[in-house]
Amino acid sequence: MRTRYSALALVRHALSGKRWPRAWRAAIPRPEYDVVIVGGGGHGLATAYYLAAHHGITRVAVLERAYLGSGNVGRNTTLVRSNYLLPGNTEFFEHSLQLWEGLSHELNFNVMLSQRGQVWLAHGPSQFDVLARRGNIMRLNGIDAELLELDALRRLLPYLDYGSDSRFPVYGALMQPRAGTVRHDAVAWGYARAADACGVDIIENCEVTGFERSGDAITGVRTSRGTIGAGRTLLAVAGHSSQVAALAGLRLPVESHLLQAFVTEPIKPFVDHVISFGAELFYISQSDKGGLVFGGHIDGFNSYTQRGQFAKVQNVTECAVALIPSISRLRLLRHWAGIQDMTPDGSPFMGRTPLANLFLDGGWCYQGFKATPAAGWCMAHTLAHGTEHPLIRHLSLDRFRLGNGHDEYGHGNWTYKQ
Amino acid sequence: MLRIPCPHCGERDYTEFRYGGDARKRRPAHGSEAAGSWHDYVFVFDNPKGAHREYWQHVQGCRQWLLVERNTASNEIARARLARTGEAP
Image (tube, rainbow over all chains, first blue to last red; front, side, top):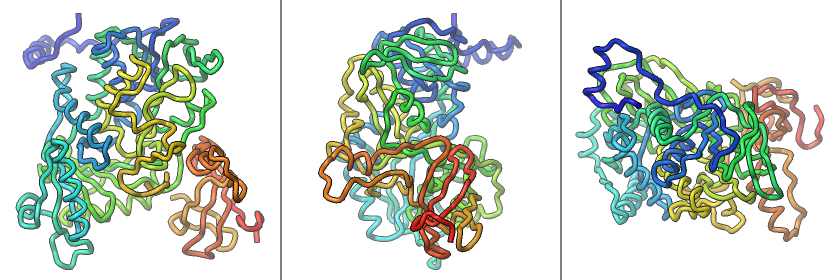
């Protein structure tokens, strides 16, 4: 019987001096499953958990090429928010935030949700108006949003550069108080442990090398640990969506790009919120260990190297110092890159593919982490019923063919400029 | 830093260039009404992990469009030619 985690269990275990047992089994692949999920990241594990816990489908395998959480679920900047503009996105990401709010209890695993509030800065009256419109749309959908004028903002974030000679003077902000951060590794571990407890097989070090087909239907996956039969198969492999889909003969509207993230040496509590710069794509928060965590744009050309370009390091740190001059002498402790699957309109693909029994959850651009619970929730429904959950109908793979591109930020058709 | 060997200007940082994307895509014939081939041309990518032929424009140098062969798994550049002629100048 698995230990139920609680404060009491923690104290009792600490005093016992024993090692903690494994949180999930090292499962041996069975010959066949009802659902095979390719990709042991946040989305794949969340889908497996909701399938088993909410839809009663427990003959499920999650196949991970390396170790659990080795991909983007452990490489993001841990932000969660639901301040989206377009119909479809607004509801989807709010559903996700509501699932985040109950997740620690649902999984019996502390994912350390910290609803410290996200402050999105405007640097001029027109940008302030655009954020006001976004806030109004959020409030019409029952989502919390507050417009902050300069005086209120100065009281909230006194350390920003408000100087009249700053390159992008701060004008105001839109705040979502319920937004915040989550301990990202705990999301992978929590979903894995809870899914495993429902009977899901989590199989690490198992790379998918091909698919078994019968006509236009996918009937199983070939892996480095043998062939596994599958009633339904889900691809949830983030930056390698194109690679795995190509094994099934599919070409996707996806290009793989690098996004870098950074953490400074730890300092005392200073940045109490998540702050998004409005003059460039830049976002910053402070981790529980004290490091300032921040990120910016993608590098600008497709690559799978997981090594970022120095020019972007320079650009992102310039943003940091422009916004908060007092951090200019902090040293960067680490920076790293994740492979993002960028799409022409900046929105993901969720649902069926042209091949029967093959489903896709990919193309997440910048927003994969915050979507984790809702993506799992909606893909579990989709896999259980064979048709898309109502919250993801606008994210179909054929939307460009139908003229239904879903461009939240109005960037247009550019994978490498999104 | 990615360095691109420009046939006119020599090896330069990639920040001097503008990226132009996959060069192997073929634009459908002018006047073509086949929606499927336009869809694939505009929206779909091979996105290979390995050899990739792509366009870069040397906007802060000779302003020429280049055809660059780069490995997307290592960022190694095999060669760069002028896109206009397909040859070194």
